[in-house]
Every structure is written in structure tokens, then in C-alpha cells.
Image 1 (spheres, rainbow, N blue to C red):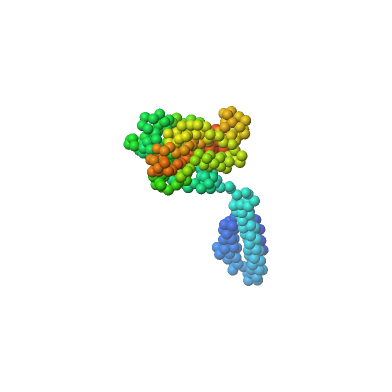
Image 2 (cartoon, helix red, strand yellow):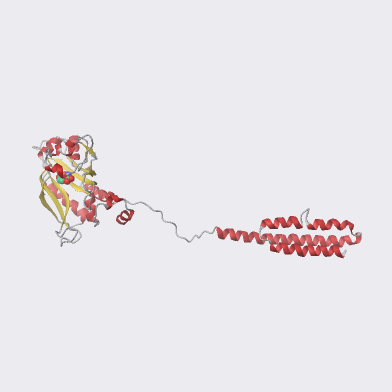
Length: 345
Ligand code: DAH
């Protein structure tokens, strides 16, 4: 008897020691099989009970039951501890720090040309101009001839044209051909239009000139339109675009499609006309070409110059952005360097 009881006691000590060393739930399951299962050590030990004298059996049975209960309790306890440990580990591995700030999405911004274009268009639309969408691919006649550039006129050479294999299909070098298209569409109704869009010139790309750039053309045709109307519109524009109290001045100029022709300047927004690098120490910034629509052009558009008059202007969009935001190189606009685009936006 004593040997059976001793064996049971030893089994218990050994099993508890093994249990204490286990680290995973899986290990505890196989421990159960080895120790308490149907083919386990305890069952194997008790199978020898039948050989014991009858009177010894109850004591052995009692002890075996106690040990079984004790081991089962120990197993449960160990499994609970391991489960807790496993959960703690999983939680710390999948740790989410809810106090971390969110990642800022990279959102886009308007291109500086778009910003300038919208400012200019908004100002002029608010003055009563309508937007007219003209085409970028033009005929030689629209771009030059009908605008009173005679063949072989040196002014043609000033606008380095991109030609196609068809000499009468060119990329417009300015937005002015839109004047003819719009007049032919609306004559003899009065018009008050702006025509924004891309222009192309086959020029060397430098800090001051690009092959592709934007202009906004303005055109007003009606009865008794005078230079005063042009002056009023451009002064109003300068004040809204470059700040209240701006001064403007007109310099005489030459364009084939206007007579008289002028350039309009505003007093330098950077130095207040004292003289600085931006205004090249002149105190003035050149904003736009303008003039009264030439009688020949009015006629080409379908208006009788004896009855109608008009004014026109044409300004570079990038140039307005350059002046307003002190950008020193037009090439930045279409290099697509995001550092520039982000800084300027
Ligand atoms: N088309 C001219 C150019 O690109 C700009 C211009 C000047 C437009 C005077 C006009 C104007 O309508 O009246 O250089």
C-alpha cells in the first residue's frame, strides 16, 4: 500500500513541477493528456489497484481522487495565467496609440497660373465682361492677316510662330485672334468680352519667356466707346488686382490691330515707385498692351467703323503672377517642381 500511495504522491509532485514550467496553452493541453488523460500516467498507475488487497483500495482511491482534483485545479489556474500572459503579449504587439496625431493627407493646391487667371477673370467679370472661349489652333489669317498684320510686316517676325506642315494651321501666338472670331459671331451687337487662354511662341526659354504661356484678351465694341472707357476699366482693374490707390500711366506703343496703341504701367507695388530691382529702378511695372480697335479690324470683324468703335487689351497671366508674388523666373511655372508650386500656392 505504501508504495502505491507514495507513487501517487511522487506523480503529483512531478506533474506539478512540469506544469509550472509550461509556457503555452498548447503545452498545457498535452500535459493534460500525459498526466490525467485516459492513457495518462494517473490512469496507468491506478490500473494496478486491482492487485492491491481490498482494504487498501479505499485509501488509494481517495488519494487518487484528491490528487486528480488538485492537478485539475492546478491546470486550470496555470491555463488562466498563460492565457492572460498570451493576451497581454498580443495586445502590446498590436498596440495602437490613440494619442498619436493623424497623418495629414497631401492635398493639392491651385497652380499659380490658375490663381492669377481666376483673380483677373473675377475682377473683369464683376465689371460686366463675359468670358469667350476662343481656339488655340488658328489660321494665319486669324492670328495675323485679319488683325492688320500685312504679309511680310516686321511685326510678324516679332511673334515667333509655331507652324504645322500645313502653313495655314498654326498655334496662336496671342489671344488677339479671338477678337475676330468673337466679332464675327456677335456683329452687329455690342460686345464686352474677355478671352483667357494659352498661347505659343517658338522662342528660346529664358527667365522672361516661355514657349507656352497664358494671356487674357479684352474686347469692347459698341457705339461711342472711347479711350476714357479703356482708361476707366484698366484703372479699376489695377486697383482691384494690385491694391487701392494704384497709379497708372500710358506709354505710346505700336500694335497693328489698335490705333492708337499703348502700354499701361502701374506704380511699382514693391517699392511704391521709389525704384527697385523688380521695376528696374523705373518705379513702374508694365501690365498690359492696349488700344482702340483699328478700323480695319472692326471692319474685318463685321462692324462699320463709322458707326462702331472699341477698345482692346491683352495681358500676360504669368506676368501678373510674377509681379504680384515677386517670382523672378517664368520657367518655374511649368517646371513642375512641387517645392515652387507649394511655396507659391
Ligand atoms: N496681342 C498682343 C501681344 O501678344 C497684346 C495686345 C496688345 C493685345 C494690345 C491687345 C492690344 O488686345 O490692344 O503682344
